[in-house]
Length: 413
Image 1 (cartoon, rainbow, N blue to C red):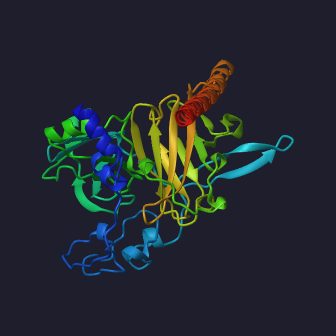
Image 2: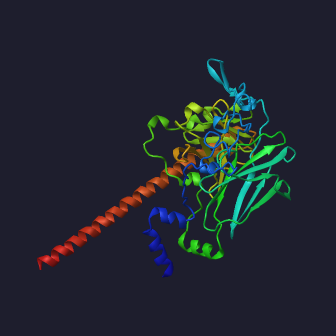
């Protein structure tokens, strides 16, 4: 009975209040720019080189983007503001009766993969972060940025929580405990792995809500979500977005084994990928909505989410490297396009079907069959939902007629 009363109260709460209680919703707030001259560059308070040079001296982050907001220019940051050297250079050619040859992608720098198996365990005033690295030989450490508002999308956003190797757990796994936190308050983390040359990965994000045991029990009573949504998937799409800012599946370029994925392996919002090959995803800047600040890729395997950030190259394009084995079979790839106010400009979902690296006719048939079955399943679910809604309104109409007849009979007597 108590549970029903609590659920009833929650139902009538305003959205802003329920977001504090419900674990699957997030409050995303921004503070007004405030240069407090405390010698700490607090990007969560909108402090930067242009607005608060006392706290934010000029820096060079070697991320291939010339950022005047960080005080970068050719004199102090030639790596970012000097001559451009794109990381990817797709080129196409023709031949054989006009057939298009799969474009090649070349790189002048080694790939820096994100950490994998990133998790955040929330306890009483403590969050324990754990992650795994793929290449321990070149592992230089991690830069962890933390925010109370939204997942930091670059190595300059949020506050610096940690810069180092982490506690070595063995077998390529590492850990860090974030203590003295406020219970009931969301914390958003982005881990940027860097190699021994000081080159950063694009970033992997996770969020956590520290709670006491009593708070967890209360949330178990009030919240019964199928799974906790990530921040980027919790936000609604920004209103009044023009149609030409819409991102389409064909705008997402997938590269495996140095070859752009052939369109014959693309079916509407489906993509067929090799399971153990590195996947490079490239989105050209002119294919993104206007004012796109960052792109977030969320891998949904049906039970949990993995959040990865795209890196903005010096040519304005966005790229993301996903190591082999990180895309589960029959998973979903959510692409969220975010502006500088952390509002969602657009969102696109692609279904991923995976096949073995040695592609045979049978394996292709199996993959296509899986795609067809998934489409039929979606259509069947949609039709069942339509039938259920129709049945509900028919029954409701019948009950209303019965009610009105009862009223007429009462007044008629």
